[in-house]
Length: 227
Image: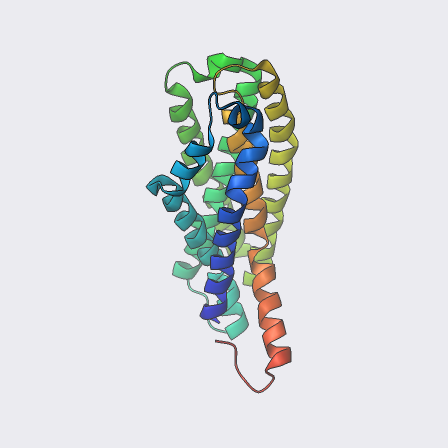
């Protein structure tokens, strides 16, 4: 079962890598085409930079942590507090990214180029991420005590999916608005809102994809136990 959990997590990471370039091209095509602020060389540098691959690895590990409980549920093994902490921490981090991305999108749309004055925007976004992470971790942990493990994961995924939809409904229009102002780095803050929204929407599908893989394996190999 753990094998299939890692397969799902790895596929999730692969999808993020595959979507990275198209999303960047769609978000900043005018700048890339003109070779003004962002260029094709910047995209190549991104795929060879350690921060990018560190972020991909973080998302993969978070997806694997979310699947820790579904694996135990399917194997009918006891679920300890240590196991519960994994999806709680991972899902709360995703909520933190959603709120942080949403705040950047709204702030850039409201402030325009002033949003990038100094480095305060990064510190504020990071602070919002940490505070939201702690807030949702407390909520998710409380849910884990009241719900069955399966219902607990299902509820978390529903909230993450709805949150990602809300994020995209805000981030996409604000990105268009920011880009229309045509200032330096236009749309960079709103871009992170779009990127986090797409990544976390895919993240919320993890448990469903995991059980789909297991079900298909059982149908194809009824005499074997999934690895």
